[in-house]
Image 1 (cartoon, rainbow, N blue to C red):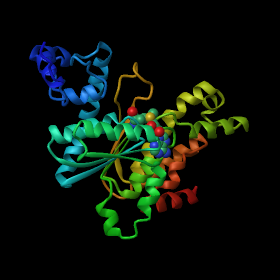
Image 2 (image 1 turned 90 degrees about the vertical axis):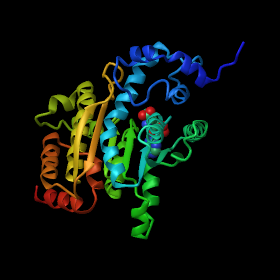
Image 3 (image 1 turned 60 degrees about the vertical axis):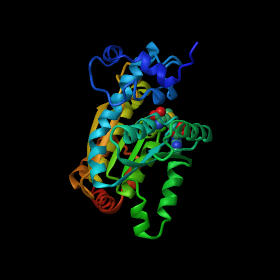
Length: 319
Ligand SMILES: C[S@@+](CC[C@H](N)C(=O)[O-])C[C@H]1O[C@@H](n2cnc3c(N)ncnc32)[C@H](O)[C@@H]1O
């Protein structure tokens, strides 16, 4: 019996008809034939190169996610000969691998992709996987927290060296709780050109509201503040709205979108932003109005940078 390599199995299995059936005739960036080794490594293909039924939806989602990020990345690749992307709280680094693969095989552009995470096991696993897939020239991983990463960046005294090594794009998918804000604060201080974050388990505003609830605080949102279930649910949306305003205040054009169907996970909001300037005062004004209406703001407000930070302090003092 002839022993087929995984590539040969993929070529045998993924006939044009099967690819069409899988993609519904859509053009996917990562097709199951050219991306077979990547998809196998990510657990989305069986050993015989077929796709398990429960991976079909995930496969569509990851393609959708990369397609959402493609327009800003392609614009930035034109501006910067080597694009630098940092994935904060990368975990198993699915997105980082997909992006590295697309930069190498589809977009054919240079990129320095770095995944950081506090967990040693995911960093070791991702480093080994990058070598297995021949992507080690495109991406690397480091065990470090987002906060420590920023401290190290802040210690670079030479402004030219700091600028040359800054990250053009900051990504943070489901980085826990305030790690999303750590990623945003890093992007603000680096003047990163684009940001993509999918927030996760926001507890900060809910904790502030819980304290207000104990103090029998009353405002227009009291019914949400007093009820634990309504509080939890509404706080994640309010937190993201406050983040969007602060990001706009820091000079970013921001959109929010659903990146996986909500049936799959409730944490499905992707915040995409592109830097247009250093600050935008009306958004900071709006942030303060919302903070007053809610009875509490978020810690990210203290982590704005440059003029945006000065304007927020000035407007705040006038309240
Ligand atoms: C829910 S996982 C998400 C992983 C990956 N981004 C994804 O979307 O599949 C969150 C990851 O963030 C990491 N993390 C949490 N706080 C962090 C911090 N302050 N700095 C770096 N990594 C952090 C955790 O160790 C974990 O691997």
